[in-house]
Length: 100
Image (cartoon, rainbow, N blue to C red; front, side, top):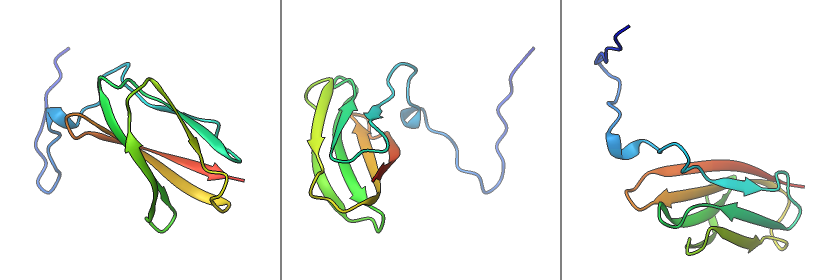
């Protein structure tokens, strides 16, 4: 069996730098949360994080320096938040979170 890549007019090409390598994913828990969240990410792959509210305002940003980062979001109102991590090569991963 042979796999063949085909260009389709109007579809963006997937660049190798935009591919997240297996085993390099980010875990954010608990979800839903009521105060504190933990971001588990390899600091050799991931360099920073940001937490945005539903309208896109960044409420927390920081650098990933350890494999586990705890964030205190107890003062944030209930709602939907997005945790975005950015890798050293510019790839991004976004996880939707619910604060209840």
